[in-house]
Length: 120
Image (cartoon, rainbow, N blue to C red; front, side, top):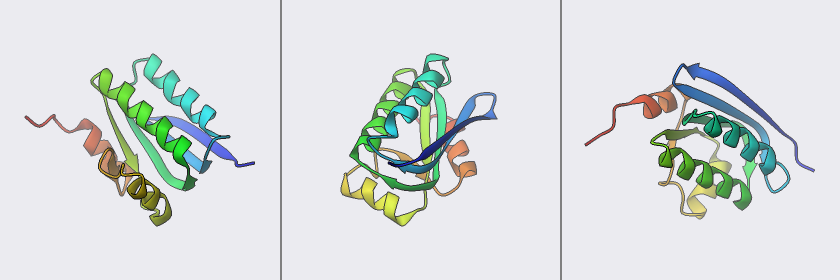
């Protein structure tokens, strides 16, 4: 069975971070879904999800992230991912989701993406 560690933390007073370490799959997605739902329910709708320590994501994980993106956007929030792992990025590309998310190389870049003023 896959293992996953989920850590949530405050990046700024307006932005929460979530680090995911391990594998994101059918068995670990409930843990991620719960953590994301807790943040959004508490009106923390600007999120940076760090996938730098994630070595695998399956379609269930993609669905959880898409649902999180939708919920954040419904509350006028923003979500950015941090990922440079070629294998994980390939999954986003194959699924046709590479352009659905703001995927950044660093947490600092993702924080900027979440806090930048909206473009007209």
